Length: 169
Image (cartoon, rainbow, N blue to C red):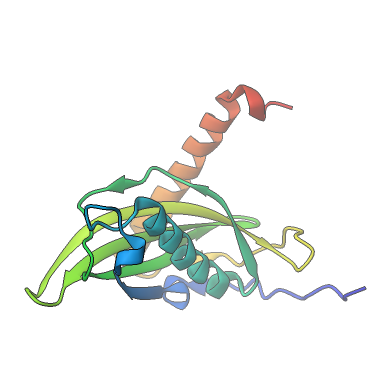
């Protein structure tokens, strides 16, 4: 049997969790119109969010939920997709991470925002048991705003969950 892993629960700055992925959009990830498949973008958002949570918690992290997701503009074959993530706030074993997506057309030099999402991940050990995570230390005004907003979103998610008939015990 594996010995329990000790977790460093000292607060960590948001900057420690920042992650970025860049990918060129190729035809095998596009629909017949030459636009990136929404499901593939969701997959990349999930991966980028997980990277930030792994860095923050220094443990495995599994996706618990993804909040509202809008596709603001199409992403075309040949575009460069840029995804950036960071942990907004950590709770006992869960973390809210924000992921923002841009598309760059390297021919025209334009960059535009195409999607944003908030995801919740839960830190787990190798057996899938929840493990505590360190608090987030927001430093900039923007990080402090996102930290406070994450608390409000969590309360809203909990209220919504309590209203679902299948979530009642």
